[in-house]
Length: 178
Image (cartoon, rainbow, N blue to C red; front, side, top):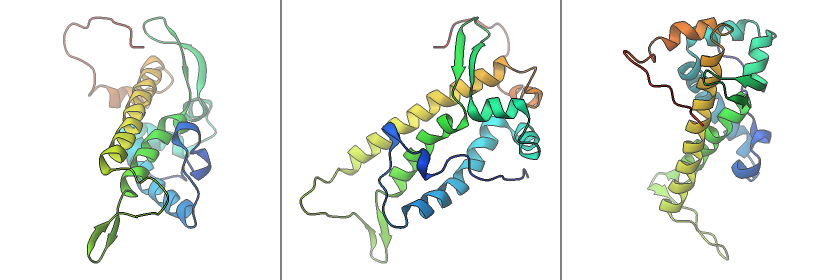
């Protein structure tokens, strides 16, 4: 099992399209959720070997590029790309999860929805659309991270052994992923 390190994303990173409104206790609950989910997402994305390498030495330049982003790298299709970093990757995932888990509150009588006066309450369908849109954005960014790691296999050698499970067998048609 890989060693965990502190959260990459915290409540203050939730800005722009993924802004979360502050309420008493939300920051602690949010950070607890991040602690639970972030490790799982990173192990799934990076593989345990790459994750453990950079947990052991977070000062490595390659980890800094992965964490904070890298501008102007050329992918395998000779397209100049920018990688925005792991916070950029993880924010929509945490937003999606937060919206979904806070849609209902569990009580002894079952799940209940807040009913506020003088405000418009979103339907569960509308909330699911918001959550799913954020999750789709996470998947798009997940692909960007994958492209960054694949393009830089000589730097992220630990990812190469993990990546072998994703390599297509047989003939590959080169198309640009934009």
